[in-house]
Length: 179
Image 1: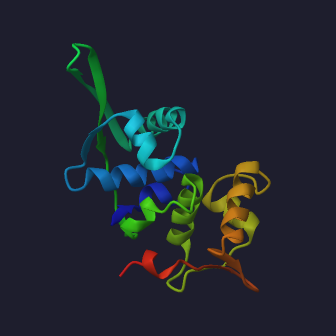
Image 2: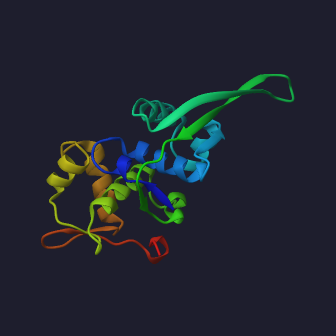
């Protein structure tokens, strides 16, 4: 799967859940760049709460990464209902495995952080930065921010991110490797 480097690199999208949400929408939209879906269905499929999705979509829309509108229709009972009609604006791509999006062992914020770390790592998946530099330069936050510390420690505890002498190494399972 190919996703936007523009979103993952730098401080374009600060929230980790939003990064994962954007990647998930890019995957669902495929070649058409359009998708029609309810917030409830999106919440169920991503594992992100409805409120976080609602606010995340509005943040992505403000950044110009998605175009949001609604499709109205009548249910069999005659009630009027609506679904989101999203158009995903795709930028220069990077490669990730499609299985990554559906991995249940990582939270959405862990997936968002991992996407960013994969993007800035070298081909051997090494990041020659301290934790403080990673927080400030990649995520535009302070290293003692609770959400950053919690997510970073979770990746370390799960063995996906390992500290070596002068760097951090990303160790993805084989089934998540991009061919």
